[in-house]
Amino acid sequence: MTSLLGNPIASPVAAINGTRRGRRADGPATVLAIGTANPPNCVKQEDYADYYFRVTKSEHLVNLKAKLRRICEKSAIKKRYFHHTEELLDSHPEFTDRRFPSLDARQDIVATAVPELTAAAAAEAIAEWGRPATEITHLVVSTYSGAHMPGTDFHLASLLGLRPTVRRTMLYMNGCSSASAALRVAKDIAENNRGARVLVACAELTLILFRAPHEAQADTLIMQALFGDGAGAVVVGADPVSVEQPDFEMVSASQAMIPESKDMAKGRLREDGLLFLPSREMPSLVRENIERCVVNALSPLDISGGWNDLFWAVHPGGRAILDSVEAGLGLDPRKLEASRHVLREYGNMSGPSVIFVLDELRRQQEENGMGVMVGIGPGISVETMVLRATGSQKKI
Image (cartoon, rainbow, N blue to C red; front, side, top):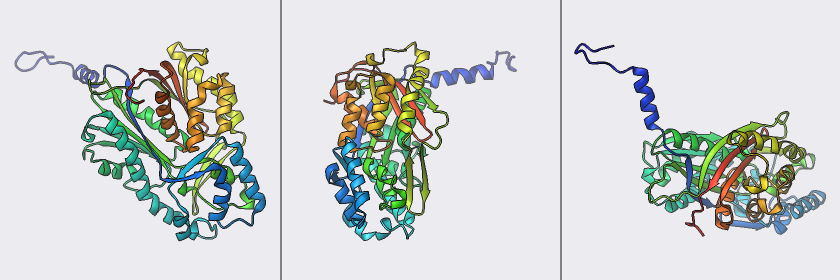
């Protein structure tokens, strides 16, 4: 095909494909910076049963209190952090009285508290990154603590002073695998948009699921014993420039659903907040399926077996979950020390927990080479990301 001037006209498809290739990054996405944050209210796990039954005015339920104390003793958790305080709970009796709806009041509180906590973690990540917040091109935010329009992403962008043109993606109700899913999305964005710098931010507040004990729902004590509040943020980008010091290359990412698991870890948003019910069968299901999920994720990379040759960043969903992953993969106990450290010091913060684990791994500075990040959430969904540690020494 020629123009009226006799010059050849390039094929539109070829031109479009060339443009697309030119817009893609040359190298893999990398973790350029990490930030974390927790609310100031800290409760020791050894005191939690007394605290919980006092603030819910339920001390007459002596059998349930004894059960919660046993759960806390076996949890391998030392302390947890919470946005809600005794004063806040006293001012909202509907949070602990199941006869009254409380979702509106909870939503009003988290609408401000979640963006603020997320901003604290994100500001730390951006400061470590070393470039202005205005150079963030994309924002991926995940939470189940509240549902609003505009959402946490909109408010976070304002709090951080991001550009009005920042491209935002908001993820809701992904549970404990939320940060892993958000990092998977960020990897795709960074690798398919040359020069992109993606801020991933994830925060959860247990106020959305806090409720008084009830003899007819004794299993809800498990979530009251395990979950804490926290926020994590990661700056992701490909082809680092001189000021940037990546900690991990994000080699590949995948997701798998464990068959027949839809009732193993489910949650429902109700008039009295989020009701989350993890099944007692979940640890055994994870143990039976985790190696298959990992093999499927790593086989395209010709990485198989030898799991102890890799480092591991596993979501610390609870002591039983970590024990199941360790047993299912035949791991040396030291391989999950970073995950157990986060569980011990913070409890299960849902999605943000795996960001805390990545932060702890690089702080230990014992592992280089290849590793795997594993997020385990409702479904049961298993998010797997293969990482290569770069040996960066920027945060000791």
